[in-house]
Amino acid sequence: MRKSLTQFLVEQQRLENAMPAQLRLLIEVVARACKVIGHTINKGAITGLLGSMNRENIQGEVQKQLDVISNDILLEANEWGGHLAALASEEMEAIHPIPYRLPKGEYLLVYDPIDGSSNIDVNGVVGTIFSVLKAPENASGRDVTEADFLQPGSRQVAAGYAIYGPQTLLVLSVGTGVYAFSLDREMGSWVQTAERMTIPPSTREFAISMANQRFWNPGVASYIGDLVAGKDGPRGADFNMRWMGSMVGDVHRVLTRGGVFLYPSDSRANMRSGKLRLMYEANPIAFLVEQAGGLATDGGARRIMDIVPDGLHQRVGMVLGSADEVSKVIEYQKPAQALAAP
Ligand code: P6P
Image (tube, rainbow, N blue to C red; front, side, top):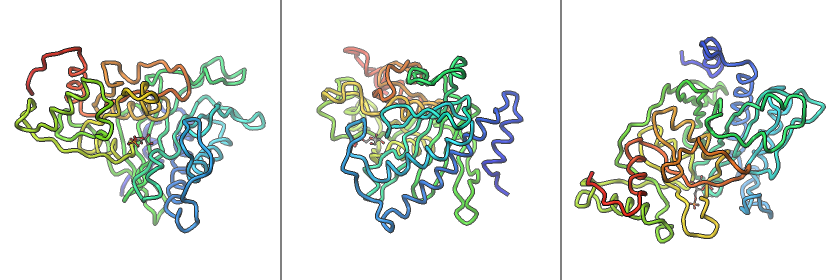
């Protein structure tokens, strides 16, 4: 009999660093909301919910109907439980404090309701990414502010994603390794199908959008050039490339079989700080990647989870995955480095 998500969480409560009841409720509520989001996306064409709104989000990106609907699903699912002090989302410019009429809790939830939403209309893989922080001690007696969210990723107490693909999976860590749960649609429940997922330290597979090649810094250009050169090149081995246009999809492949994923900052005016958002994309993914034995940096030697955010929607360059390969990317970033062969 496979373990349910509830059984997993109860077991986590029995560990020495017992999971607090509010955190357990938070994860169960988010997991339930992801079931609803997955179902809503799955029926998108039938219910006429594909396509875009005629408005943009804070990122200046055209919002899909399902971006807004999924944002509200997570908002409504989490407001009543008394486990959160506030929420924040890619789809909302400001933070969303828990209304005064409802009980407030100790946690902050930051999420991207649908990552990769440009893939929705073409039936591509998309996902929901979430990050959990503790509200500052002194926040209990006052209104929560955006500044309370601006904590480095190393302060996360839990993180995860749901991935809506051929399978609907919930991949989660509460700091004791990475676990995956598959949605059993007949029972409507999450059942554990992977435990302590581990990223192999080396890989022959990379993920980057080659369309941006002319904008990369010399280190990235040289690193990717050597991968593409294959066995006749400096690396002495052939590499394979995958790019899903949905970070959750690429990251799940890396967590499952290794690889290196790169979305570096580049010379474009709007990409000098990178594309991915630190608080609700880079940090939760970095938490999972490190829990699985991988590395996650800003493309250089700066660890994603060491970055102190200066804004809720701050962007960052990102390189993550198999530790040996991420270390190589860092090596290539060193100025005018005469790089050793493999
Ligand atoms: P591009 C989705 O919008 C996202 O933030 C990530 O999920 C994905 O890896 C990346 O952007 C895709 O970016 O420039 O290839 O469209």
